[in-house]
Length: 393
Image 1 (cartoon, one colour):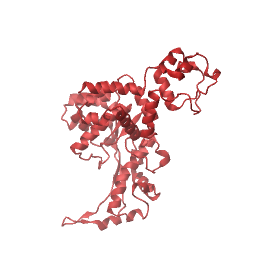
Image 2 (tube, helix red, strand yellow):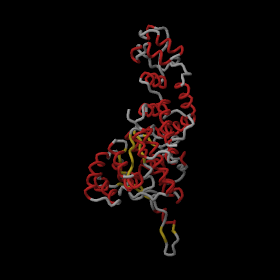
Image 3 (cartoon, helix red, strand yellow):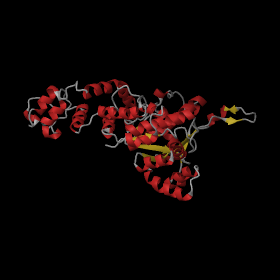
Image 4 (cartoon, one colour):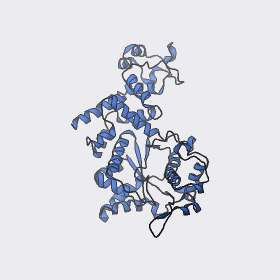
């Protein structure tokens, strides 16, 4: 299982394919989120703009060597945000005031898409590198490294239908829970309502692309009713992040974003932390267990499962183990588990079907058993992370 996350933080407020200017706190928060994402997910798909200010920003802030290493390692990939939406807030008069009356003769939102060289990965990388004044030879070398890491997953095929997709969401009252109920004709929306529609429009475009490519999103879209059936991944990454923060809290450890913001780690430390023993196991565990459960359920499960206070074999979930050899349940496993459960499992290497006990596994139990057999569990990764944190003090 590869957990892919779509990061649109760099382009969520872009206009005409050009990224919006970010304040220093916004820049630091985006980098802290990226640091956290790189520790929780296998691959990060970063959305870029037409001129690829995203790449230029990453190189400027993190250094060329770190960015190249992130790309070469396959941790980071890029996707050009091609769909665009527009709205009007009126016409400027000669005296500098805005004539808002003209908006009622215009659709509340219109759309289009980048095309040609604007969505060509080589051109996109070239534009980003050119901002940094990198010489031609080095630029060409970097283009050869970065271009293969572009993914063709975007929604540019929406083209002229971009506005229609967004207006359909409004007229079908799918935006009611987001503050824009369908109470009037789209052409009658006032300026404030049009601004809300414009902001939600980017969310809708992202949601269609996320559903299409089975990506996760960091935004908290749990309450969104937009195309509900197709948006099951939206919000899952947010849950993962929130639940990891709760686990770290009970371990008396700062959350991952704050570890970056407080300068305990920098982005180059990613390569060491991602490869700590049990790191990949932890990513798979938290993505499978933590994306749908709330923080209370996950932290309770973490404590009870990892510390051995929950019986592994006392639930009926429809997933039966055929025999003890499936999980290597011999005397060795019994000693690993310990306690009465370990004694029962380690008693004999015979098929469980021959033992008069129901040994069906829930998802958490399965992860714990497999992890114990391999010498891995979520806590083992947290413990190793804490060792690395202490080294920085």
